Image 1: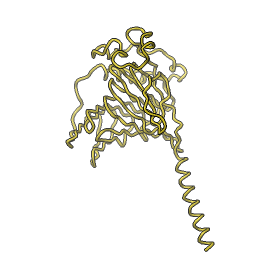
Image 2 (image 1 turned 180 degrees about the horizontal axis):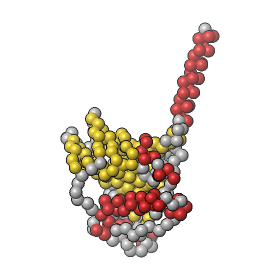
Image 3 (image 1 turned 45 degrees about the vertical axis):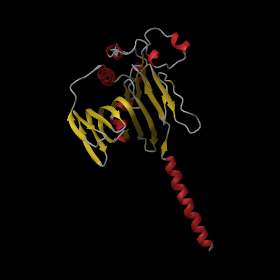
Image 4 (image 1 turned 45 degrees about the horizontal axis):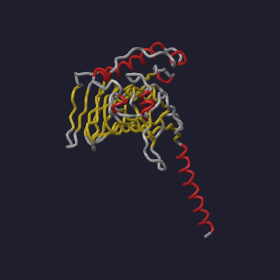
Amino acid sequence: MNNGRAGGILAAAAVAGILAAGLRAESRARIVYLSFLAPPVQTHRSTALLPIRWTAALLNAPVVEDESLRTGDGGEAEVELECGSAVRLAPNSRLLFSRLRRRDDGVATTTVVLERGRFFLSVRHADARDFQLELPGARVDRLKGVARLQVRIQDAQAGSIEVTAGAAEVRVGATVYELKKSHRLVWTAAGSVRQLPLRTDTDAWAEWSRNRDREFDRDLIASRPRAQVADAPVQGLPAPGSTLGAPANAFSAWPMLSAGAAAALPEPAPRLSRHAAVPVCARY
């Protein structure tokens, strides 16, 4: 009987040790941050104790696990990962970073839930090893190498993914689609799935994302030390809001600050931007 009890205690201890090891296998110590924003942009972090309360996003602020971002009319935002990958939100978009962790082997694990709107993603090779996207009605389980995607969420079960660089495995229902460069996958709530060529039309939001990529690639090719580019001024970029009819002052369409704070801003609301810095791991 004593031997049985001892065996049970040892087994329980072994299970507890395995569970503890599993908890230690991933750390939430990730350094990702808002590298670009043009108001209105808001953020909130999901917690069990506090109600949802959206607050104004701040440039260069850290982004943590379970944090959501949303843009209003004319708003834009970019979150940069450690190795230079970028997740960009066009106006009237919302996402959640449901997983931002690092495994014991050093691999960063990232899951982004794209809830509504339009998104541009540039994922560097080092960040693509465990990078997943959850979409209404679909999921991106795997990216291959350096990948650039454009995602549109139409409603609760419909959307599209365009691949402009690299390749991605997209799961819709029980079917996995291999999406290569210059291809587009469109799915609907009725269950229809089609693979199509890329759209030929473009607009200011797509051009804004390409310009951000070009800036980063120029610095990457130049291979300048991070300290030399981290605080460099931003090159002049087109203002998408002006070409798409966004209000002159986006705060009037979606109040994000108090009336007094908004009134103190110049007209139009300033575009807050940061030059893309080039971390060492972006080269691999």
